[in-house]
Amino acid sequence: MKRHKGTVFMVSAGLYMLVLLGGCATHQARSTEKSQFLKDYSQLTKGDKAQLRYVDPLANIKSYKSILMDPVKLYASTEHRMDDISYEEWQALLNYLDAAVREHLSKDYTFVQKPGPGVMRLRVALTQADRSNVLLDTVSTVVPIGLAISALKAGITGKHSFVGAAGIEAELLDSTTGKRLAAAVDHRVGSKVTGEFNKFDEWHTVKDSIDYWTQNLQDFLAEQRADKTF
Image 1 (cartoon, rainbow, N blue to C red):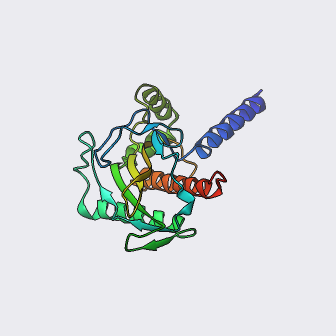
Image 2: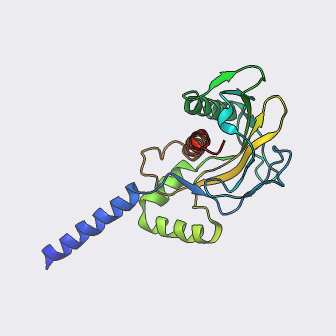
Image 3: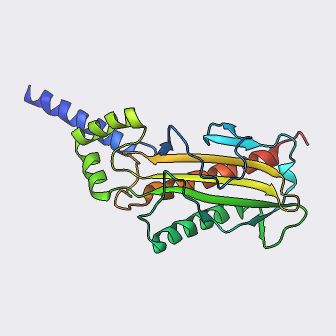
């Protein structure tokens, strides 16, 4: 019997460790706020990978070979003022976002400094950047009862206890005419279980979200280039 109990305990512990190591780093928030970084939100509709999205059905996006990228901005909404972020911290986050975009898109596009034919203009703003509480986040993840409490809160608010959150707004424009080609608004929150050993980085949720968004942007543009309708 003791052996049986020990086996059950080992299996339970193993399953618990699989749960700890198997989750996604971030997930989409249940609601979104508009920061007014984008001048027009009327075209945006509910999306999948982004909460709100727009793609001009007549735009020949695959004809563009270069990108003119505006400086990435911090554009907080009224609800997410981000007053507690120091200049050094938000500068580092913006630099990370800028670098992530260039790393993903430079494989397929040339980044240029001037508008012109075949050049897309990319505007991007970080609209929310909530750090996680490293101590409380770590404790509530390791202790099973804390994980249960956090899951209960997530069922009500859509956000786990003590984890970070991030928001972004972006649009692609024709660099010469200013005509919008595509746009997106999205907010993501951290998962209690990321499957990564980054729990002691208070900005890991924001960085994981940026990685998610830039990969999606790369995938979207790849899909546009593969489109045979034009």
